[in-house]
Image 1 (cartoon, one colour):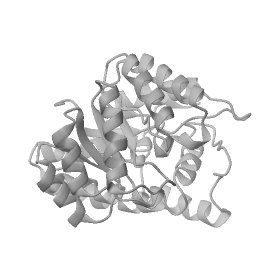
Image 2 (cartoon, one colour; image 1 turned 180 degrees about the vertical axis):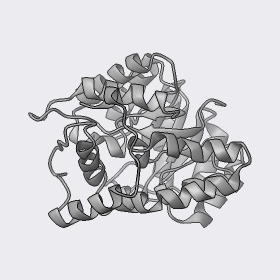
Image 3 (cartoon, one colour; image 1 turned 90 degrees about the vertical axis):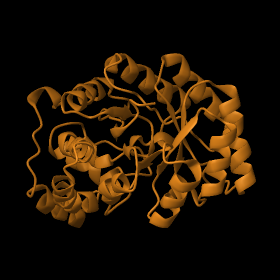
Image 4 (cartoon, helix red, strand yellow; image 1 turned 30 degrees about the vertical axis):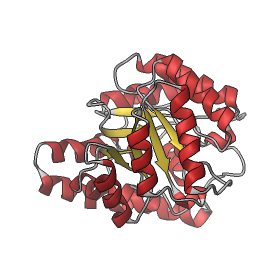
Length: 301
């Protein structure tokens, strides 16, 4: 698991104007991300609009991106749903592809108890040999997996190697590291907490902002690893306005709009997601003017 660290960028799912998958655009994004120094890639997580994809489409995206990466960096696809059978199908598919790990969201809408969460993740761990990273995002799932539950899973299921914490409660995150062990891989899923998470022992971050500034988002981790905390902190605050702006509306709404403005993808969504309001588009342009988006011609549509 030494390779599973740093900036693991959660790619958007690109669509053509008619709404079908745009795998060619995703291939360009993969190559640009790797050339920019991203340490790994993830697909079909929150930023990839998984609930708008069929299971077949999720597998198609995973397969294509795995082939495009061709082993150059780790791939950590999101394979979780709120249905155990579907999650098992997608996780087994990721394992067959040779993914480095699978990212498993806490089941949403069901609002399970901690015992239910333990049994759910244990059942998945019993069914595969693939390393598993649990994805805790209580703002989307309405359930927060407790540090004690994560510690129990870590003790009982060796292939559960980490957690992506989209959790603004830093006390919670500290308790996860304390109870699970400081070698447990804890990734920040909150853009404003990428640097702070590293400061308390995190393994890296899964930041939507990496879709726009992959070099800078990766550099936060690289600088910390090099002991250059002052430079990492400067970069943390440099990215703050953009990190904020991308969440003025539900992710990946603003992100895909900005990527469309930069020519990276067609800014196409699947309902119920849509483009940001006209006022937020105006405000996004003001924030964009603060950054140098060094997008190479080869990455553009």
